[in-house]
Image 1 (cartoon, rainbow, N blue to C red):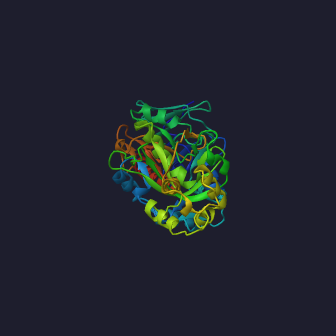
Image 2 (spheres, rainbow, N blue to C red):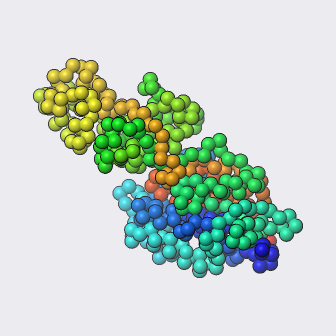
Image 3 (spheres, rainbow, N blue to C red):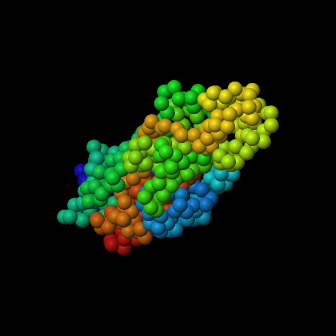
Length: 428
């Protein structure tokens, strides 16, 4: 049976992930009666697996430049409402001390994601938030006669004056974010971006590719997107050309590590514009062709393998020399100029054919969703349905690896919870 408006919550939240819990805590503290529903088998599953089980809560320095999707100015407006310093203070007040690592990522000092999840759940309880779990919502609607939103499920129907969708995107579906929230948003007239694709996803190489034999090897590289001609691939403004730096991990299926994950969503979008797009890898990012060639020319009798030792692990050096058909014991001065330059290009401008990505099952985020144009960015309230709020990954915002997607969840969840609670409480 559907609850009546009298015994229902002020605010109904669908999704008990990072954005949903932040919204629930914020609204509950403001005095609203909050009911949160989540259908996943494990509550807070994404939080528990984030950062290798340590939960990369945020990054010490966050700006709109760390995100893709909706426009930078729109993203900045939301981020400014709950910046990193406020997130740090929020968790410290919950007893979760954060530490900054060399990468700028902030982790709990316990190195346990469970610390973060337990603190959020306790904060929900302290704020009077009720959580129904597992409680998978099948559909949502607005009932004009009762002036309530209704969430229907096999477990029973519930209603509330206000509804907040924090049901995530499609990444890591076993955590509960299987894209159902998009249909909920469409119920109220919201559109979706033309593409909803995996972000922060490992990339695939063709079987037999020489890099597959280097599984487990990690190098700091620079990645960019190019056309077969070698010209940089450029997205329409304001994005333009894309280049990322970071660790690249060779795996048995292809490429992973921060650099591959960061460029994956850009590669996916680029190939819809031009299927011939290639990944360019600079294995020695401190060099370009002219500077590396100068090093080779000045090597004076040193073997090719020894010349490469300062720049790369021997396992990689031997592999790339084999790819270029160069004897590791030969001196680079002995090589014809064209063969030497071919090695230079292989090291600083190698073109790699990516065949795909590992999909939403292994992706850490979703690219695409409800456009921010359809949301009031100061309140996260829908412009199409009064009393409806949206937060987190359901929106067309995705950040690079390093805690940025959590920061978006905290900021958008805080704004939505604060606004929804204010309206809900004063409208009684």
